Length: 472
Image (cartoon, rainbow, N blue to C red; front, side, top):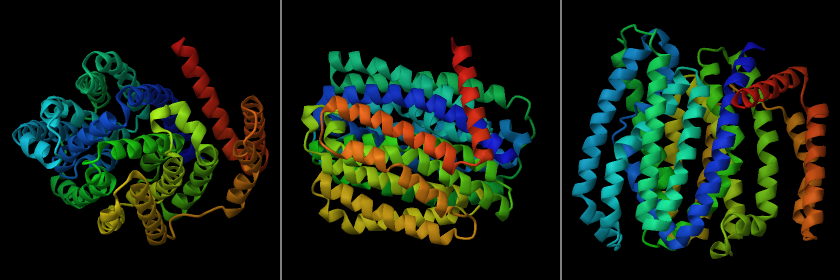
């Protein structure tokens, strides 16, 4: 299948690049969490949330439109990118100035005088942060996720400089270290973006269409930001609880690594396809998502104490329930992301906007009860479930679920769940986990995947091997 072959090529780079990058990033981030502790890490989370506010307000919905329009109007890509960047850089500088002017108000609102020290550093890093966050959509629209993955790997690698700076300067050092990482990312990414678009020199004339599409997306961006960050803003006055919440969600993000790579690669493949073609490809992708995410979900749900001590350290002991709930929430979000990718691919981004509005409304209505990290994650779980139900119903007819393969995947996972769940000698537990996951993969290969799937995975591993060989 041609579409699956193209998706496999893009997903290979997403998984390989993001796999290495996320592994490195998680090591660095979890070490930073250990260095800062719950309270300072909660303050750091609040600062990044404030940074995201300016990313959202100044975006005007254009970021999420870039992938669609670059895929649709390939020959005028360079002109569209230039016009987009001129507006984005200008708005980023304006945003930095506004942040500097409002830092006293923000500091007083959160009753945290230390924010006056950190916010100027955040303002300085804002243009680089914004340019970094919009480039993945450009790479996605250019259908070159290889360079997107390499760029992210450079960013994740550069973040390591934050560790000695934190040891030396505390939280200020962490902010400076991240700013340096943003700069390194932008330096590489935009050099590649202009190289990839150098032959696509047509003039982009669909300004009205782009503006209309972006206008709808802008409301989607606002509601997405509010639904994703409202809880952090509500908990901002209690930095320790915010630290617990964000640390547990960092663990949940591991669950999303491979599924998000598949979904990122999926959008350019489905744009312009018929309903029948979309159903055929999406059915397989959903199966791949379940295969890759369920083992992580089982591990984090049935071994939360081990996960907490191993990744976060003793300062975070006692947040096992939060990690369990966060894992379920991220699984719901992954499945919702699958349906949202279909909506985006068929040009029905209004469904995504409606889903974001529903998520925001749920969090806003229940936000008064978010007095602790546990309450907050329960509210986020409820919002994720409601959105999943909504988006799956509204996109019906454009996807097909292979229930037989899904049931097989769940059944094959039972030995792994049993090996994780029981409290036995650690060495024996690790051995049983390793054996059971190997059995799971063998059964998936033999009983769940068909010949098309197996051929795709063979190409994937051959590509991974060639990448590793070239890197050596």
